[in-house]
Image (cartoon, rainbow, N blue to C red; front, side):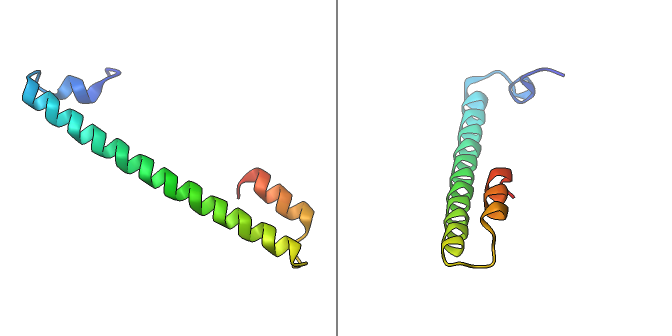
Length: 72
């Protein structure tokens, strides 16, 4: 299999390559948006865990720090 299967399967004319580029750019933009949302959610969850820890919740510091390190 080729290392560029998408572009290898596309006819080599300017219009088709332009459409391929547009599709790939849209996929890239959607992936970046998704990763940004996931990163923000992870930050909010981590902040919530930190707040629980400081509120003397039964969550032990050792367990919380291990969970943050393992990214569970």
